[in-house]
Image 1 (tube, helix red, strand yellow):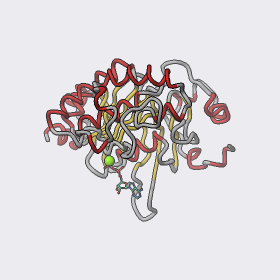
Image 2 (cartoon, rainbow, N blue to C red):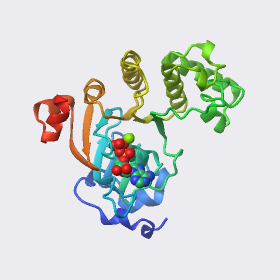
Image 3 (cartoon, rainbow, N blue to C red):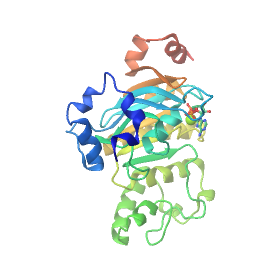
Image 4 (tube, helix red, strand yellow):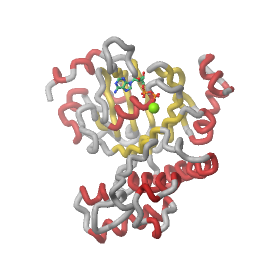
Length: 285
Ligand SMILES: Nc1ncnc2c1ncn2[C@@H]1O[C@H](COP(=O)(O)OP(=O)(O)O)[C@@H](O)[C@H]1O
Ligand SMILES: [Mg+2]
């Protein structure tokens, strides 16, 4: 691509970008695209001055938004409905493209990298399982084997990987032959998690993935999600509107309102030094 393809991204540079551009000249990052690797420790997810406006007569859904999720960290994005949380996740996943700003995943500038090639696994509230496919079938397309079939893995390799992953998420073999419509909410959630985990990617974005669960299963899955994150050593950006969920799960919490970041910090920092009345309000809700 040429520098002119994305003029908005050029217009929006300010403090904070040095972190990345210190390592590689900006032009090299862009030219090298997927091949450019930044030194260790600069992985994870980074949004730098990202703006996304859907409709010209509406304010931007995401406005000059900067956030870093360090490699291996569990960050929770909290905010009321309409704050722009899903848009941030969709921008990271590549389901939306930014009007301005830069997005990095695993140290790579991914603004131009299509969805599916960013190494980002997405888990939606709706699960997005294929209703006509079985849970797992190593020889044919199925919900869990789908990403591996697409990569043309051998049946043996698929079997090895999927057995490992289904064990981790606690999916019984007796469920493999069922279709999503024949599963409980918690079982369906495990299938969605397993599908997200079978590839080698270790960057996850999760959009209110526990909303459809009853309170007991929600608590169980909450600790499972965190345990899996720690076991795999993945980088996770998790969205919820539930501050209590955020306080339990997060290494870092980012509070968002009306498209902008209000405060980011550890749960303790937010409790002890709320930077805005809105943060206090969420903490006391
Ligand atoms: N595809 C779209 N077209 C137009 N407006 C959108 C679109 N997606 C989201 N929006 C608007 O952007 C704002 C932020 O939405 P969203 O990111 O879904 O918020 P949240 O996930 O925090 O509830 C809302 O005002 C929403 O109506
Ligand atoms: Mg949302």
